[in-house]
Image 1: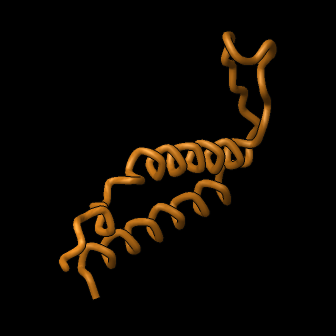
Image 2: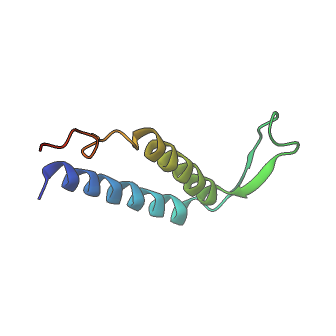
Length: 79
């Protein structure tokens, strides 16, 4: 197996475990205020916001790193 793939998998599992720990221990209601986007404050448990922020960050990272591969089928064919 590829060592880089194993490292990425272990890293993602550790981050997911941290999210579970945050969700179990941070149940208080907190507010999120984004004046340009939201007209009033948004109240949710802290754990829900952590998961939401993680999802947005994960999706952003996936979009930024996608499409960096080499185009293997675009070359000339040998006769």
